[in-house]
Image (cartoon, rainbow, N blue to C red; front, side):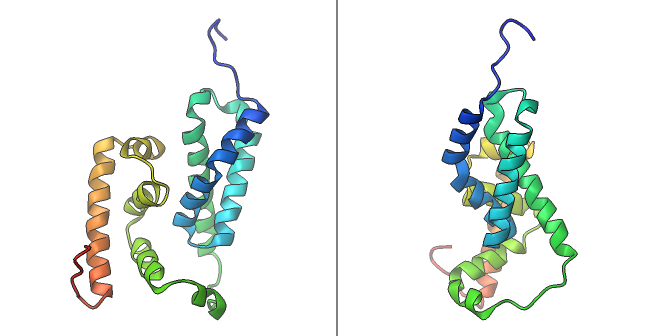
Length: 171
């Protein structure tokens, strides 16, 4: 290592970061997985993996994007394992807790192609900027902006059709 090498993160600084960032991690995981239990599992596993591999992080400045990437990979792992499961009927109590509006929006987001869904989750569920979303997904900022516009247009069309073709002033 050179004379001006960056200091590695300590356990305390990692835990401090995770404490301040955990709600955003949960929003991202829930956006991908749409189930509270799976989202919590993904966040727990991402936090653990981040800590276990902390020494592999070369640039402490990149901790946020590094942990976010670990989380996204964990969400993809859970989604792959879900495809192997035999679908069970939803419990009525769970369905009753969801509002009709959130279910409509959730369904519309689920219908998006994966590359557009990722951008909507990071931009609007986790409130990331175009720049941060581009970094997390390793895409140019222009591509992120274009995909976000396309995804919003598809969501708008899908939501209008779900509402019976009615046009809402808010859309």
